[in-house]
Length: 393
Image 1 (cartoon, rainbow, N blue to C red):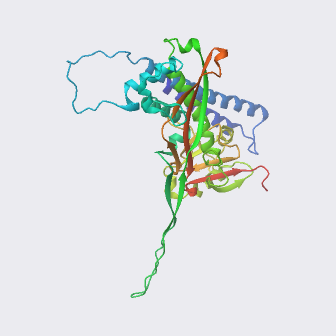
Image 2 (cartoon, one colour):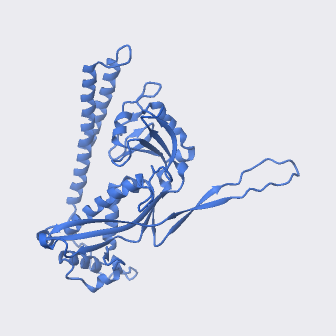
């Protein structure tokens, strides 16, 4: 058994032991003594520690796999003239463009090859090579839960999405009776483009050190920063200068109910507030603070509604549905729905530009990455929101 699976099994055993301890220690009023509550808190902390260790082992395993890849692949086949049907890569997808971009980065954009002119951005920077853009998207997907769950569209201009506003209804008629006609009407949602940028500084020593993996560092730093800003906007944005988020008061999901505190019945009600067709691909999005409350809740049969994952890489479940947590999800709301109805519109490619003089006195070089992106929930009924309002009556 691998170390990860062993830790998952230990976590599950610890969680079951914690549940059994609570059940065996309740008094006639269903409460725990102060000492037993302290013991349970320690047991719960151990479960969380196992979870953190599992994530650490998974990250180490991924790093080990990456580092174990061969740097050079031996040639074992005979030289051939090449596949005449295989077209050489051109433009920003070519190796020449990628190498020229790296040379420009390392030389503080003093060595700019003519090939980079194929990807000049309208604002004066250079469009990132296709390979960089793909890898940057990979970082955004890994760091940003909304890019995993939503529908992403690449656009070259404003993108209009048609939505059925009203639908014709069927009706019974008598034999030989007159037909009745209903009009189907449509509305539109417009995906525009909001500009997002991130800047980093690199020392000149690192810039000129060929042993330093400049590409990986810049892509990782840019990717994480962009992903965090995107996730915040995709969840909480008000649509002014940024995307319109899932939890937005206007244009976000449908408020199913408002409660003063979270109870098991409220979560069951939230699930069934979502129409059946959307439930098959539905998941929860919530803040870690609310997750701590949900892990202690039981249904009317006394069973915990929280179900820890027994498989590495799979999300934990709540009432049978996947659970995703975000530091940017509000503590005053929980979302449940099919997030494929949240559309993310990427306008064109991301671009790099250099800040030539701003940090020259400090011996550092500045770089800026920019992207244009928008996001909107195209069907409000596809996501239901449980509001948590401590002041509600």
